[in-house]
Length: 122
Image 1: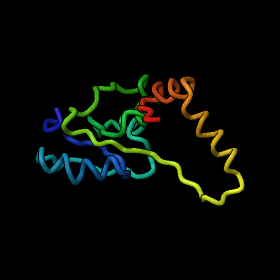
Image 2: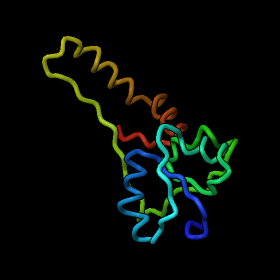
Image 3: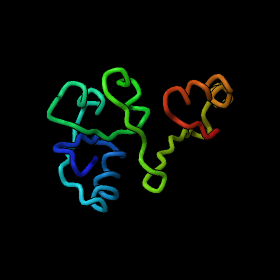
Image 4: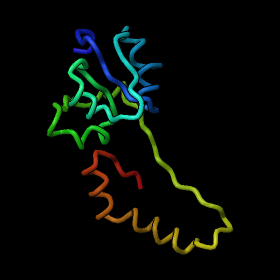
């Protein structure tokens, strides 16, 4: 499917860089175009010159009614992108930050994160 594609859209983000540097060279894919400032789902839906697009699943979900979501990369090709939170130790809002972190660990937030195509780790 990838090699038969005429024009592939990839995001100008960490996931796109990963594809460019790690995945596409192994597959000998050269017919990709880095798209800046747009989500790949909207590019595939609007620009008929692209026949395939790659972006993180959570970024494609909002376009599931406009494009065909084929699936995710095989497990051996996947890369985890982990989002983290940090704050100053002397921060005067420590109690509010701790409360926010506790909120992020609730089942309610976990289910929302999953619905958005992400995997909660906390």
